[in-house]
Every structure is written in structure tokens, then in C-alpha cells.
Length: 94
Image (cartoon, rainbow, N blue to C red; front, side, top):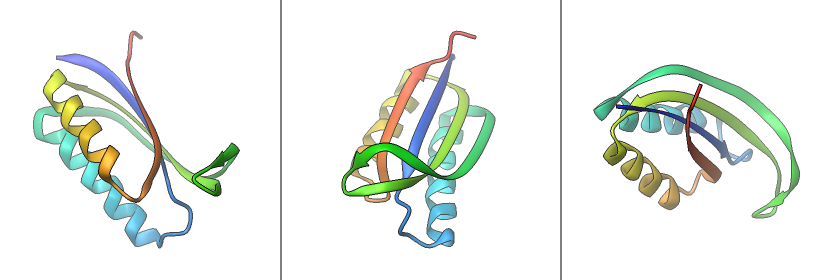
């Protein structure tokens, strides 16, 4: 199992319940084959530049350990999710 970190930005124009549902969906994917070590919903923030015509976004940071197959599935789901504006999955070396 390897350590990973994922930061994703959720659209600011959706309801709080939809944000919570999206966060739980991604937690479920990670928990299916890995273990979440840290989860932090950082709230709505201003973006440095406009992404998909949005100036704000809800930032979520998750540290987890998992097999590479879990990361591949998480990336696949994030690509097709309408609520995610941008995401980045990295190996956590710390």
C-alpha cells in the first residue's frame, strides 16, 4: 500500500447536501480498497484563475493509503463527475 494525497475542487453553485454527497462518494471509493488517514473539507475559497467559468470552489484535501488500482478508479470517477471542477492526485512522500 502506498501513501497518496488528493486535492479536489467542487463546484460552488451546488447545494451543501450535494457537496456532502460528493465527498462521501469519493470517501467510499477510497475506503473500498484503502484507508483514509486525514480528511479536510476546507470550504469555499476564491480560485487563482477562472476554471470552467467558476471563480470560487469548495476545496477538499484527503490523505490516504491504497493500492494503485484504487487510485485509478478514483481518477476515473473524478473525471466523469460533474461536480468536480479540478483534481490532483499525488504520491505523498512525507
